[in-house]
Amino acid sequence: MPQRIYIGNLTRNIANQTIAEKFSKYGIVYSAKVVTEVGTDSSSAFAFVEMASSEEAQLAIKDLNGSVMDGRLIHVKEDIKTYLH
Image: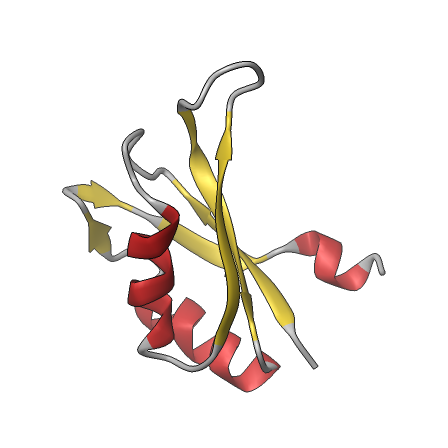
């Protein structure tokens, strides 16, 4: 079953592709989407990744939470909306 992951404290110029590449080391990435501010193309400094399986997602969360990406310490955790569907 696919699982969504929340990534926080990103740099404001991070690209979807950069995030997808980082997470693809842990499995199949269905989507990677940086959330942008309404009316602009400016990043809100967080993103969501959807991975193919819970196992892949958990491995990515374990390895990447607290790691550094583009010079910033990132927060990686399960997206709570995963449980609300």
